[in-house]
Image 1 (tube, rainbow, N blue to C red):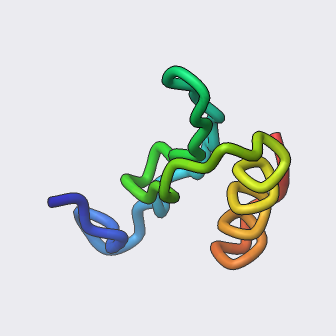
Image 2: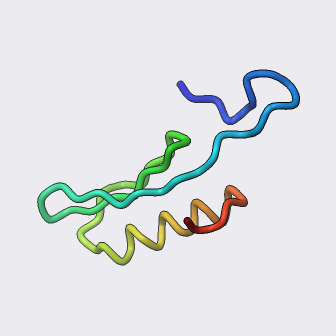
Length: 62
């Protein structure tokens, strides 16, 4: 399981890179930190959930 803590003190936290993926008629957001949102039929909702994750993590949009 991925930890949000740095491996050693003084190192940087993992960067967040959100991607929207589609499987059939469903879209979902996932992040390089291991976070993911449930699959949605609405691409717009999947994008918003990804943007909310970035905002909550303190990372800006790519």
